[in-house]
Image (cartoon, rainbow, N blue to C red):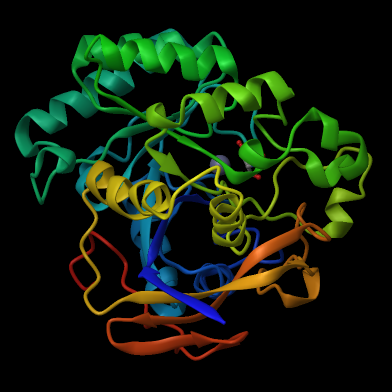
Length: 371
Ligand code: DOR
Ligand code: ZN
């Protein structure tokens, strides 16, 4: 039996759904799924109900996370059309600013250039006082993280360049997008990007088989797009899941919400790619540990590691083994070559062989004094 010991992973893009959508996930079930996936730090997205768009809403969410989380949690703030940059007084307590400019779940899509301009300008002005964490300023700001597909990508690249604000492009999925980011990096733009496991391992060829269980934003892309992601691995800074749970009943509705869970399958999928010699273990550790910590200025977790078993024979993924409240995966039935066996966080065993050992509230809320 081969057991590997690796550092705890960061998943820099998860939707833990609290407050407002606890029937899909909450801080306990979502961080339990994280530990089951070998993830010891998650960065939570702001498209909850209400969204995380004011200092009060951020503080309320931090209290929920502090009471329930079993791994460490950073919280994004959101720009909204109505509240604009109301989050600014609490900007240093967020892991970053999330801006949606493409089709998504919820109502956070920004409508106007006027507001986009204001958001980049005010974030950069705030950073003039406190700096950016990615530059080593401990009390500084995180990046501007954008959901910007297709023609919205150059808009965001340009605003980031004009204001010298670090840009992080989430879930890049198309050839045109990864190639544009490659050129921007070559020209010295302050841009980083992430890619999801579902865009690395599924394509439009899987969409008919999966139906609504394969529907997310960005949608699954063509095999040619997927090929471009793998060819440009060096341009990809981060692997992050976009863990976006919706119940199976919601997915069966006439207009199902987009999004798929991913926290528990990311590491088994990536390690299967290592077994297939498409990735190295160092590729995973760079993109799931080292780079997200640098981009978001996340603290180290001492005495924290994950033990994974590399299986002699691949075993099909089973929904029944999952901890996410929604209990399904688009990878159900897919043979995978690895399983997470145990997780140790700050010296304490927190997960072992399917059983959660951590107490609710043992996770830290990052960038909040008490955490
Ligand atoms: O598929 C998605 N689901 N894409 C998004 O942009 C949002 C997410 C969600 O929150 O469900
Ligand atoms: Zn997302």
